[in-house]
Length: 438
Image 1 (cartoon, helix red, strand yellow):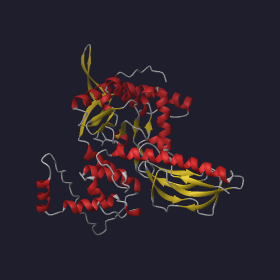
Image 2 (image 1 turned 120 degrees about the vertical axis):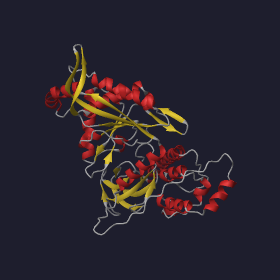
Image 3 (image 1 turned 60 degrees about the horizontal axis):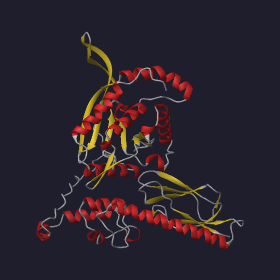
Image 4 (image 1 turned 90 degrees about the horizontal axis):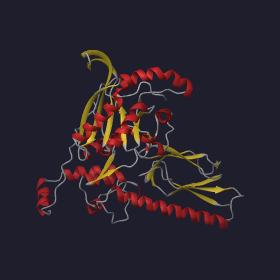
């Protein structure tokens, strides 16, 4: 009988490791092809790995809770008697090793891209999160190598590094002064990290542990604020034409397409057109380099059944008509609600839209979804008395109004660029054609 190695797959761009959350099969179990054998989790999405072959699971190489790099063998399946001969199996395994080696190369390159300033001169593995914290805190590779690790095989976890930083920040002032004097004149000491206030639970208080996704969201939000100087600009937009058009076509659209037409695809269409006009908002920052993205991939923040948020991405939004955008929006929203999003559904975003008005908020100042440089917030659409200029003079009319907010990275997006982007959005939405066909 031949043995087949199950390898930790690469689940999207920038993913170099995953956590095994649950083994769905045990050693000795018979497995059909495509049977899910293990649940895994990354910092982006949870997923199941199906068995590529039929056979018996004879060995699992990692425990639940272990963090496994992409390309590592996680389980071995013994295939049925009709499997290829031993020689053929060796060829298959050999080919698998080549693929795994290629994946390792990709992982290595991705690790270098995450942090070009920290070159790993040792064989010790560091996760992207640990590297990012080290970079933010000004920890050199030599210093990072000395941090004691409590993870598997002595790996440094986020908790290890935070404990080290706490001890490091609490070092005697005299020692810190000596280090500054000894440092080169051109060196700049990293800004001290603000300490979180100590919190105590009172009598009758309920303590609720954050789930894994909420912890990731919390870390991502704090990181974004630390990385990007946030500025938010606002603009009020008359969307009366858009509201009247949707009211006119929604029933026919539902009857014809068997799904709803919401305001979201209209805003995404306008956002994509505005990004084409101002590509500096569709960008990322790499040190002192600005990467202007060729593709316009717009993420839309969506709520999951457990209350957490996730951002499915509509790829090449500028190349799709309103019907295509509507179908993509509905499909991704349904997959989010049923926890069926795939890794590719949430990767590759270059700009994000969040609907702050879902629960009645007039406006808000959202946090940038790194490594993007801007995020658009949609307030609630409300009827308001507005002064209109007409040929006969100014009049007061009841109009449907919305406040758009654009939070942007002030390192590369100035107020002028942010303002011009919002003005373009205003122009596109206020000139919406009420006779438009879909």
